[in-house]
Structure formats: C-alpha cells, structure tokens
Image (cartoon, rainbow, N blue to C red; front, side, top):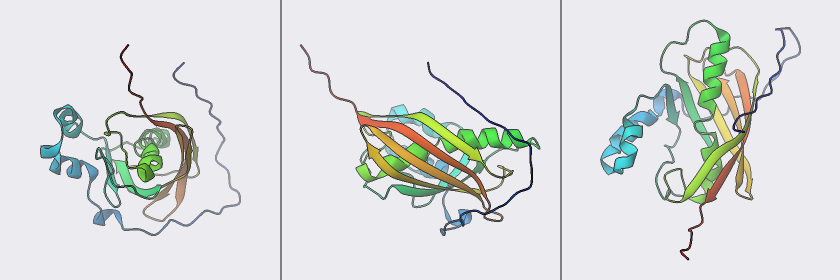
Length: 194
C-alpha cells in the first residue's frame, strides 16, 4: 500500500476567528529564487543532477537563508522560511489552489528536520521520504500570489523527523493552511560482502 487518504469537508460558515501572527522575516522580493540558485551552481553539480536542475519548476520557491541542498551542508536550526507560489495561472477554482498548495507543501517540509544533522537529499547514502502528511485549510487563498511557509521540526528520533508548517498569505498575513508531517530520515547501512 502506497497511499491512504482521509478527508473531511464542511460548508463555509461564519464563526469565531483568531490566528497566530505571521512571523518576521525578509519579504519575498529580498530572497533569491531557488531555481536561479541551482542554475548558478550548475557547473559544480554532478552529471546525475543536471536533469533535475534544468527541469521547469512549477512552484516558485525562495528559501530564506538559501537552500540546504549540498552533499555535506553546515548544520542549521530545525526551522526555515520559504516564500512560494505557483509559477503559472491556476484559475478561479478554489479547490485547485488548495490542491496545488498541498502538492507544494511537501517540497521543503521534510528538509527542515534534517537541517541540524548536516545532511541533505544529495548526501550519499542518505534516505528520506514522507511517511504521512496532514493538512488543514483555514481560509480561501490565491496560490498565484506569494505565501510565506514557516516550517519547524520539534523532534527527530528513531529514523524519523516530525515537522510542522504554517502558510501565511503575503498580502494580509492571513494564516491559510497548517501542516504536520512525519518523514523517514536515515543513512543507509553499507552491505557487507559474504
């Protein structure tokens, strides 16, 4: 079994409202596009990474402080901020905005848990995968506009990392979605020859 989904729906209704404030950080204009960073580092990339570097990125992402993609990156705090949005027009259907945001939410969340350990998906022998991913949509939004994705990893143990994410709309700071994820993160053991 590869995929399980449980979903619940409700009709829109008025009710009490509150939210956490959008955290401080640089605006999206001050952060370099991750795809541009990859293209700039292309000359140093191994040949097996070139197709990934050159492919079109459907989601524009700008990681505050830079991406964490090296083979032996410096350890960092288990939190990060990513500005992101769809690169191409989605249309008026609010459900499609949520579907594409859900897809994009998995692009950097697990990487938050590995930051303190000085590894990335490019580290030889490192294995990672999303194990479960839960999301809650709080307010309608337009994912063609910029959103701040605040991410943190409060725990990693037993070959798994736990991550939380909060997505804020840039135009007004509204919290539009929250995420929780657990992911596999381990170094593969070398097999000994008989």
